[in-house]
Structure formats: structure tokens, C-alpha cells
Image 1 (cartoon, one colour):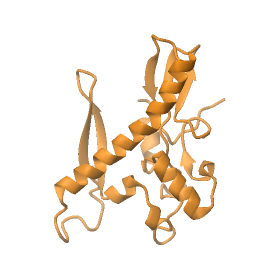
Image 2 (tube, one colour):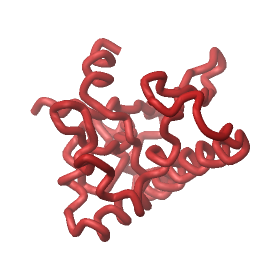
Image 3 (tube, one colour):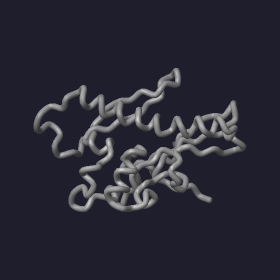
Image 4 (cartoon, one colour):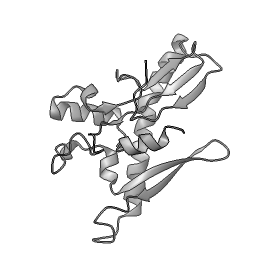
Length: 174
């Protein structure tokens, strides 16, 4: 939590799924490490194991940002619009996660109040918006689960391991 302010200032919070990463890499010809930001060096795995298999870290990828926090693919317009991530298709809406008292994760749909289009045009179809949000989180789950299952089957994760999630946008100091 002590790094949350810095993270929010540095990251554009465009969460990426494996499908997003692959589509962008094919479209641009760039290696994912050039546009994917994670806490640990990006190696295609969203799960890291530390502390003698007692700590499982979900290192969820986001799009790298330029110094001004704009997306690395923004140059007067989106240069990857045809393969833009789900998070971009949601704009100006954003998903804010909240942990309930029982430990469940609640997804709240908010919006970016600085968007010049707010209050203009047609109303957004709530069902379509909720479907995009669900698609994003289901895809992230399906990206992570096979990695976790392989690690558990191989014994790389302790039975009493705790699961943590990183805040991308800041590199781990070695």
C-alpha cells in the first residue's frame, strides 16, 4: 500500500491478458518485454514463487507507460486500435477492485471523469459493459490457473503458501 500512490502516478492501469499480449506482439512485431510492465522481469509467466515456496505472487501485466503516463502505443492516436486490450475497450470506464470483509473480490465499475466524452452521445449498454468486465477477469483467471496448477503439481508451491498480488508499474529492486 505504501507504493500505491507512486504506482497510480506511473501506470496507466491497462491490464493485459495473454491474448492481448499475443495479439499486440503479432500486430507490432515487438517482443512482449518491450510493452509489458510487471514487477518482476516479464517472462510470460504471471505467477512467481518466493520464500521457499511459501509465497505465491500474481504478477499481473499492464501496458508500459511513457514518462507522461500515456500508453507506449499512443502517438496522437492509438497505433494498435485494431488489437487494443479489453481494458482499452472499456474506456472511459474502469474497474476498481475492492476486497470484501469475507475476502471476496468485488468489481466496481467507475469512470474517468476527465474524459471529454462523458455525458455526450448515446448511453452505454450496461450489459455490454458488464460483459467486457467479466471477459477481462475470466481471461485473467484462465491465464493464471494453468500456471498455478502446473506449479502445484510439480511441488513448486507449498500447501500452506499465501497468495499475493503485485502492483505493476514499479520494478523490483535486486
